[in-house]
Figure 1 (cartoon, rainbow, N blue to C red):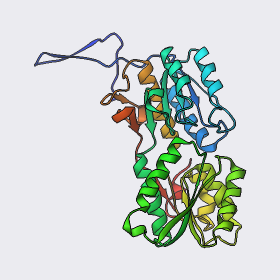
Figure 2: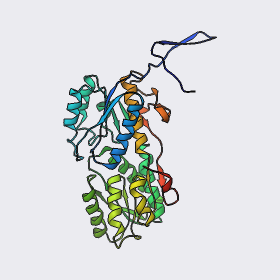
Figure 3: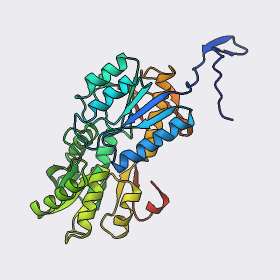
Figure 4: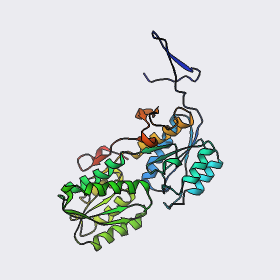
Length: 333
């Protein structure tokens, strides 16, 4: 039976031993929560935002998604200012820059708006909680581990990232570089980190450029859904198909054709809809005073269950999934 919270119940008494504990308040109804993605037309961000909006509807809030059409470092600033003026109860943001947005988000919090970062974090002082899709070290290392297996731990490799300032990308790349220092990768060499700016055409061109500039290239990691799909589209009609291995982070729906035609063997991701869903519930818990964002706080995120706030206000959704021909048709997102 599902737990039911009663607003009128301020105390819970444990019968028999007489212990009294404060009950967690119920989620407030009618909370205004806005999602602010890196860019409004990014397919990954759309899935994540829709997951959040579904959660907001579930708990009786009023949700919306607004944002820029490009992923520039300052493109989100005007949207933050507008949401402050609208007195949103919470802003859920995938940050385009770790530091540039902090003064504006601090102003939001000073005005009573809760700030949740998800997917891509700011500096901790810019938000109340960060919803991380998975452990950052685990994501970065897993990408190199997967590519290493696919190229027999030998050859030149490159990374096709999003924007140079993207917090999540840079953190994952740092852990990729740490993983590459291990002895089993002694025959793998990182020759280039390219940036497609989470733009489809630029990512396509950057993939083409990598293959042309590095004739001994054996593998590319693209830890961005825009980059991996654009890279796969170029590779699928290139003479390098079957010779250069592409992996990274993508959604099953956008990568299915490339897995089935042999362009891509395997890639990874979590469910972005669940990430947005979890972020929305965290925002509601903050705005309802169930939690403050300190380490050890706990809250329930609907169908996903109970979560605990970790160090530096971080909440982790869970480990990523590896997709290949054997399992890709089991997923639809």
